[in-house]
Amino acid sequence: MKLCISIAPHSMAEAIQKLRAAGARSDLVEVHIDGMNDIDFGRLLRKPRPHVIITNRRTSEGGCFAGSREEQRNILSQAMSYSADYVDVEMSWGDRFIEAFLARKSRTRVIVSHHNFQKTPLNLGVLYEKMRGTGAHIIKIATMAEDIGDNRRIFDLVSRARKDHQKVIAFCMGERGQISRILSSKVGGFLTYASLTSEEVTAPGQLSVDDLTKVFRVDSINARTKVFGLVGNPVSQSRGFFFHNAVFRRENVNAVYLNFLIDDLPNFLAAFRHELRGFSVTMPFKENIVPLLDSLSEEAVKLKAVNTVLIRKGMLHGLNTDLPAIVTLLKRKRKLGGKRVVVLGTGGTSKTMAVAAISNGCETIVVGRSPEKAEKLARELGCSWTSFEKLGAAEADIIMNGTPVGMHPESDPVLVPKRILKKGMIVLDAVYQSRKTRFVVDAEAAGCEIITGIELFRKQALLQSRLFLQNLS
Image 1: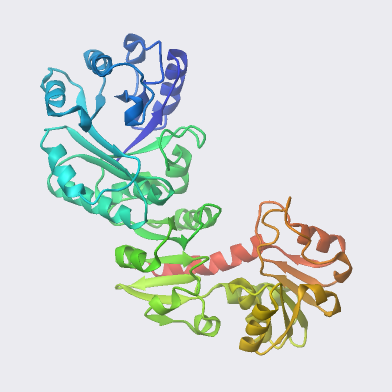
Image 2 (image 1 turned 180 degrees about the vertical axis):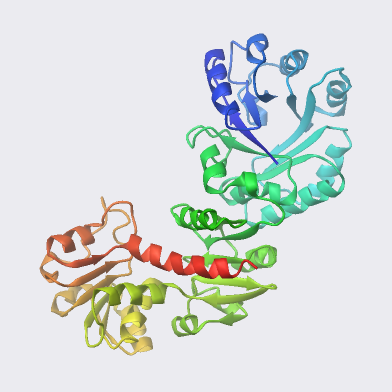
């Protein structure tokens, strides 16, 4: 599969500069000329230069060109006269104009495109056959992903084209469609697009060349690549793909880890369970996924929650690496038996923290903003509970935060009054931002021993990565 960097310059000077920069890092460069008023193909296409695709779309086609259709076509004809390697024309132009371009005696290859910026239509097969009937050298279909399952239909279309020996570029746009940009070569796509930087994207969901090559290693993805990922909603803030892809690179294995933004969990599993070897699970699916699995580990049964799924012969096995990660980090600080533990929050992460404490002989109190939720969780686990208003009365050797407070330090409330924090107390905060949360800063100032959310993330991710590596064969 070829890697194509897409640029959208506003002047010839910018075009030349970006063409050189992009050409040094890719097989092809797509130049969107519709934002330029000083186009000079003699300069732009003068050799030596990288192979280029010339694109000139009207505003109604998702571009910036404000001229007439005739002017639009004449400009692309000029690009062919100057031996552009490819020109990209819209299927909406009609068969007569497309045939005229294809009939020209030129070394330029013609890409016939269809873009749908609203959805992925159900009639992809019909559209594909109609586009194939034009005799295009390459077919391009780009649609907006409304659901992660839309990528599955795009993959099936690319596989069909491969059997037909038809060169095709097909992918979904938007965050839900990013996996199709990364996995295109696994199913036989002709190329995938990238931007020079994350600030210079030319289409929704487009990834930078650094992300595609350095993080996801698209140049090494093929039909034998094993696929892992993160299942959740939202997933944009997750950094797990950096960690796991770095492990795969270090271990020199043919595997890739992606983010899957999921709206309908059962539909996702139906579409992809036979394509994946495993995945991480984050909110809101850690508990929802349990009844959809074929088997559970001891920790997952105890928690009724899963953060890791391994897939073997289509069977889904659920595990939980959060629990052993928390226990391991706490035991590094001191022995747990008999310690007084306060767990902040009543969600899935807080429940895992409480189970870690209770199962190691700690006297545990769950603290919730909702008395009903706190009492319900305490009854389930067989421990005590209280409210945040009465937190000051609780004695603690260890305080663990499982709430999201701290993710937005500028606006989040104070989680724990400073007077509660004592020297020698262990404080574990599950929030893993790039900078320390207010809770952690206050705890450090009080002389507490700190376990940060980043430490917790790395420990559970390390346990996950070992499971993923074991499931490669």
